Image 1 (cartoon, rainbow, N blue to C red):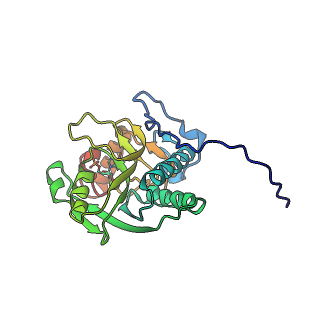
Image 2 (tube, helix red, strand yellow):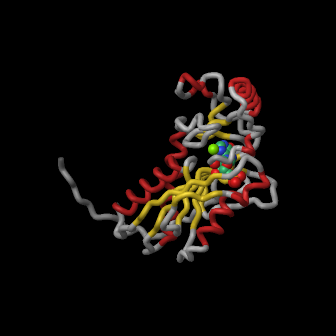
Image 3 (cartoon, rainbow, N blue to C red):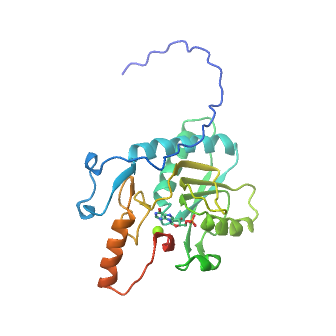
Length: 245
Ligand code: IMP
Ligand code: MG
């Protein structure tokens, strides 16, 4: 292999401005499932692809760059919110590591995990149980912010540990008209108020193994619920109730 060195033009080193995250409109028809491959056992259960995997990867890389720009020389503790946040968090950490390795500044990073459990109704959200996370600190990696209630409860708890700085990154934020809407510091996409699965987000522990985000219609949801109700007596009334993360 030959490496040929040329004089490099002197470009000014500027920070690339961050644009507002892409918004997926309410009437976006998505991509047909037939354009992609997905596990056979999910045939018939899914509606359309909302965000393909490649776009998730590219957008996550950009979030990693924005985070790197903002954290300066601080060491970080990444707190991954399980289970739904594990894919995004792992990919984000990987990008931060790669960017840091290829720059002058090596970021020291610890990774910790928390799991949140709450009961299946809106009223009991305040009783949410937080498991794990001994070293609660700065950057929280989450899967999706729906109403934002889960995040607020978690942040209240993290703040008790008095970290120097807390930043929240979530790949998705749902467009909701609720008054308690929460916006993380970094997010990948704003999506319609739909129930989505894939890329570690589940419906009753199913669909985490899909690579992209897929819209999962309420029609299919009610069919699956009906099937489950006849198979067992486990009752779940709506996607809003699915708070087992
Ligand atoms: P919250 O409404 O922001 O409190 O969302 C709480 C949790 O519900 C999220 O962290 C997810 O684990 C789960 N969740 C919310 N919306 C969806 C969805 O569309 N698909 C799968 N899980 C979801
Ligand atoms: Mg879940």
